[in-house]
Length: 150
Image (cartoon, rainbow, N blue to C red; front, side, top):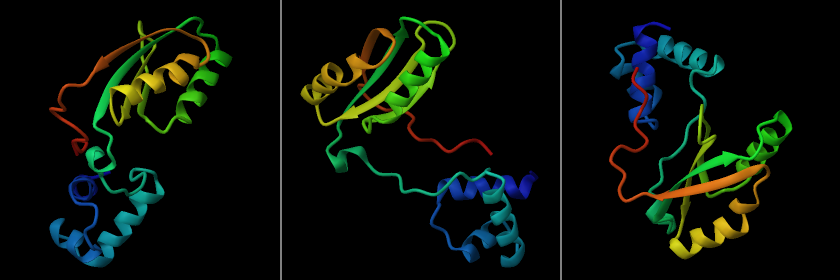
């Protein structure tokens, strides 16, 4: 990956709906070489996909919690079962396995505190292998969905 590829990635992260012609102009390439590079970035997996960034409030999802999970046991089957169960919960926007304690960090959105409480009681508390869960409520997003440095 060279400087031009990095420029293509940086430009698309900022504005993913550019036409190929607009992208080529911004990275100072003609359309054909820009298109070849773009297809190669997609083929190699440097570009994982394209999506719209949606305001959670537009969907009524104004409540956010960070959930720290400590596992009761950490054998392979338990961890896989936990991760598969978490991946099926639509309100979990991010799930990361961590070194040390806690074992996992989940970013969860719901409509409000009552909806979060129901999700925690009815879904999160029943996740396999979990010893304890600790939630921290998000007061304000300071940096959110920032593009990767290119």
